[in-house]
Image (cartoon, rainbow, N blue to C red; front, side, top):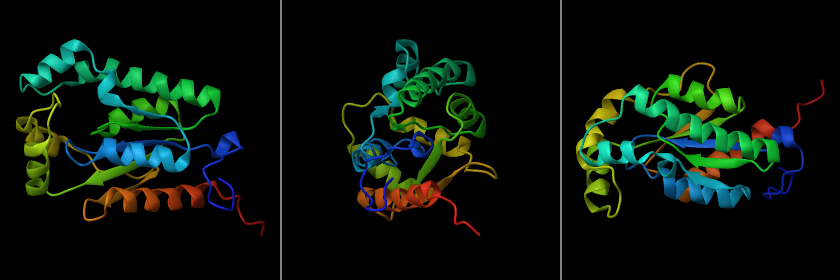
Length: 187
């Protein structure tokens, strides 16, 4: 990113690839769209990569298992890799609940930055109870909360709590990405 903070990125090694992660209801899609606009990069919602079988399973209130998730994560990874090959940068909203799922995504684009959105269960329940037109039922929230693994040592990213608005979360991660993209100080 240039010094003026605009979204134009000319150096491919500094082009951002961001996964906005977290459990259902944390605002991944809203925040991801805003972040992609702020960075001037393509956006995708990983929900759009699910197979019909995965959607049917979740709609029925059955959590996905690793066998369900692996081809889905690979599809998301290929989409990210295609953006990397084009040098466009990208933001994708994807639950990426476990380290091994994030490792799959990193195997496609090693420099991915993760924005982990968090919220308290009561807030998530309130958000999910008013959400319309989404296949993910409220009943699967607890399985996601039980399974989420926070970012770990060696994972590039930051955690943003829901006490920040999506716009504030976007500015926080954009600033972090600009820090990471800045050339090192010559000492």
